[in-house]
Length: 395
Image 1: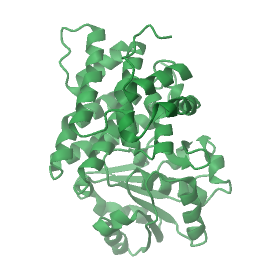
Image 2: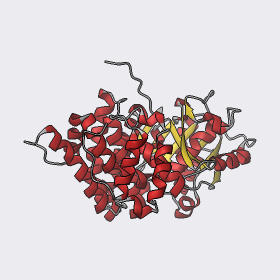
Image 3: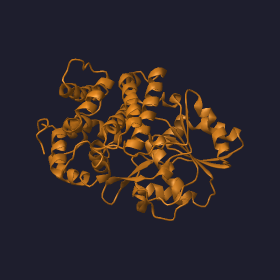
Image 4: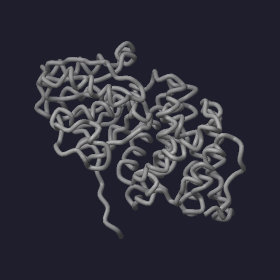
């Protein structure tokens, strides 16, 4: 067995009503002056006030900043950091979706590191731990609350780039499914598929191990059986709880095993076409799986079985192929765009997209099958809708 590391948040708190524990947890971190980081929608929906009440009940001084934007650029980090740098906040609380959680994690280390935030891009380039952080997701999808990763758009080339450091893991993550009950169907669909991609990619990644495998398979099962219900009957508490737990487990698996080509190909789409991360991942998933299947037939067969496909009596190849059709059907059922045409990509965009994706070695090196620029371009072309499915003879 090869050496592997396993990291996640220091403390995980789950279950209905767990948000009410946040004041006590902040007090345990010796917090006194707390900054809540969120977006205007979360503030207007009222989800923030349970957090404020719990913190203030413990005698903490609480301030709120709601400047987070979706798919955030590095500039938003710099703007917020300039506002809060000298305020003396000793605890950060992020409440919201993946963008909010990512911003909170990186703002924490910006308070204690002098480097320009762009110099932190890459793996373990953050020198010092940050201000203690508590993360509270309000969607079931990104898993950011348990990963050492944060993703931002670099406006110089309109490509998404990642900061990866164990110092981004929070002190506490609180996962309360009740906070997701008001998430609209489109966001539930996109974030839910994002979580499913995390689970599938981390299960089939080169960096997977026995521990992450068991976690990822459980996540695939939970998400596959509950996502449709969560999208179309958002008040179904059981479906929301299954999605919250599935997203958490997928995030833990992602944070330790990593992901692969789906994410690598999705990043240029998100940067250049402003496509929500979950939508880009979901759209590309079936096409990347078609290419990847021959890299690990057994694991893709396991994925099909975890989704709920009937694979008994099938050959390993036929069983593995079932996961492709299952993903296509699930995406269609919950309204995810079916092709790159649907999100504004044109054929002339594809070579540049492929070139950008080919540079994301951190992810491509973790993919179960090697890709060159040519193969990436063919995957984009198929996802556009003008090329037949891959065969295992492509080299």
